[in-house]
Image (cartoon, rainbow, N blue to C red; front, side, top):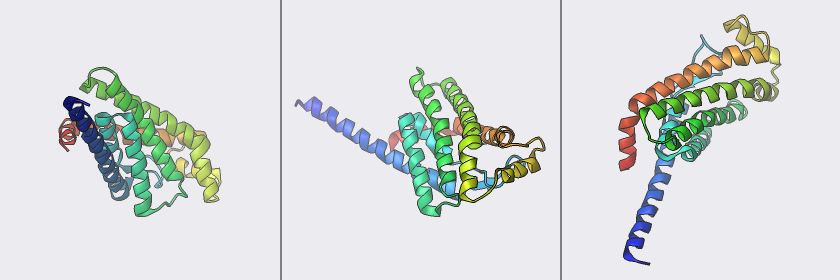
Length: 212
C-alpha cells in the first residue's frame, strides 16, 4: 500500500469516527429536548400530543450526513428518551414519535442531499416534502394503527378519543375525522415550526458540525 493510500485510509477512518460521534451527540441532544422541552397545544390537540423540538437535531443530522444518519439519530433519540423517562404510553407514543420523525427527515434528507446542489431551495423543498409525508403518515397510522393500539393498551374505547377531539373541533365524530381534524393540523403546525427554526440556524450549525 502506497503512502498516499495509507493517508487516504486514515482520512476515511477519521471521517467515519467523526460521523459516528456526531450521530451519537445529536441523538443525545434530541433526547434531552424530547424529555425536557415539551408542552401541549390544547387549542390543536388533546394533552397526550405534545409539541417538542427534538426533530431539530435529527433534521440537522440528516442534512449534514444523509437520511440514514437521520434515521439513526431518531432511533438513538427515542432509546435514550426511554432510558431517561421510560414510557407512559406502553411504547405506542415512542413508536409513533420514531415513525413520524422518520417520515419527516428521510424525504427531507434525500431531497437535500441527492437533489443536486445543497442549496436553501433544496432544503425548503425537502422540508415541505417531509411535512407532507409526515401529515399523511400521521393521519393513516393514527386512525388505523396507533390510536387503536393505544386504546387497547389502556383499555380505552375509540369513543374516548372521539370525545376528546370533539371538545376541540366539534366536527370530530369518528376516529378518522379525529386523525384528519386533530392529528393532521397538530403535525402540520409542529413540523412547520421545526422547519422554520432549522432554516434559520442550519448554516451556522453546519459549519460547527463540520469542524467537530
